Length: 301
Image 1 (tube, rainbow, N blue to C red):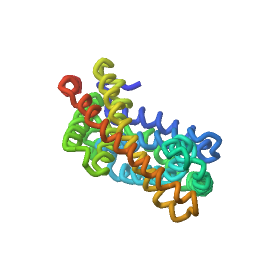
Image 2: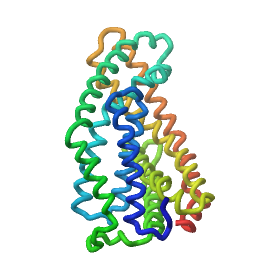
Image 3: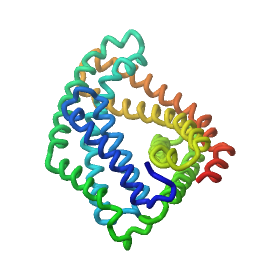
Image 4: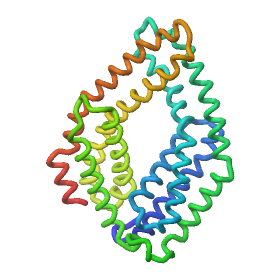
């Protein structure tokens, strides 16, 4: 439980300790792979922790935070390939449903290739997560959080400030950044523009879910989260197709005969689906930046 007037470092520690518990709870399942959702939940908790580290950085001692930001980035990196391949394998039928009906049966070698890569990626990830480095990250991070509020405030200018004020300012700032980034986007804009807006949207969503929903009125937060989720669904679909196309183009040389030929129509279908997401963007973004929504942000945060 956090309160509006609570010190920012104390509130951050409450939220981050809860996220660390999720990381440690899901760690065995992520390593042993009985359920792919364990790895997903592990990565979500790591991403949310990284977001708090960024957004509330001035509540932490700079040298220690620099170290742990690097280590959490490492955790995100070493689990990335395994999670991506989980998604590709589990969503294989859905992806292939976009291919012309006559070519779907030719894509079985692609699934075999993805499954083999998935096993190798999981073995590599498991070794990293079992390492002394990973154990030191978790232990050291917990130690810092447990003693954070007792550290000197000299190099932590936001440590003693009320979390409600700090979180509100960050929510408002990230929302405005999304407005600036999203307004110039057009149907012909480069994929990077959509992807960068998506990343910024994740940052805002984590702020709203971890702090906004606990500190601000639900009638202001819920509509904002709803509009953001709708926008993120379009941006996420766009990015998923971008990554899938890049993956298939990279695997094309490893496939033979009919399987290789079948990739062409599938890639074209994925690219059309990506373009369809671009066609939905303006409508979702307009809701997110509506006059009513902007007024709610200004009044609330």
